[in-house]
Length: 315
Image (cartoon, rainbow, N blue to C red; front, side, top):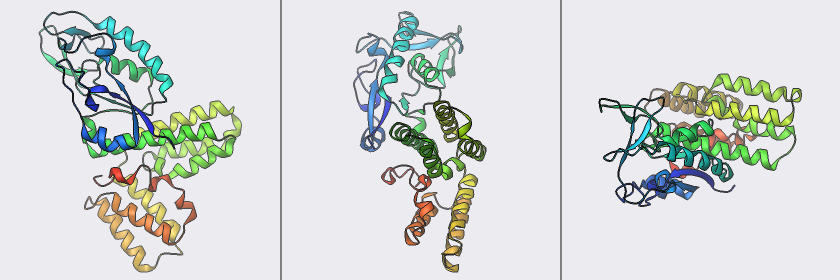
């Protein structure tokens, strides 16, 4: 599989494009995640023709229709930014992006809680950057985060998991034909979906089972929407415990009494918050290999992203 392509605010890669001529390099994003990702860098201010360095900007007005205004000279750049952004998102359709990492708090690229200054010059954190808002409206199901939120282990794991799942889905849709391909994909992702949304798990199962009732492209489009919706929902310890216990059921005739007791104890320790998710998952992977459990060997839940990223070590 080719590297995943993610859009990203240029300054997070260390590019000196900020208003003061500096950057906001994020080492995890560039050096660690960057080993598995090909970035498509975007700097709205520079790409719409502003200089480096330049006067700082901020959002003014109300959350529904904020204005992008230079801080001192009060030049309104809203239309300039919007016209550029509307063209840029169309260009980005060709980039096969599996997600986007925005610069937090930016009046152009902040995805949430950006300061908006009201008529009394008082800031309220209710804004969305001009480019980020247009991007998210154009790609409503694409995984998005900002570098600040990615410091949260659960949000980081969820974002990267979704990006990898979207890449696998696109590869499956592109390379395989026939309805058997959808069955194969769904079968391998069942437990991953269940860990996020039992409701979507049921809906998607029914969709796959009744796939002869609709045209293929309509079916795949509907499945894609449900897939991305499900994975966007937060996985909780209780949901993961449900999945782990389901997987344990596949070893009824194989695990010794001691092995079963040990696995149940470790699942219980995870449920109580004593150990991270990687511990019961690693033990399950061990038993899958030891007993050659063919059905579980196919389950993406056990390996949804590169283990080197250590994403399940802190959730």
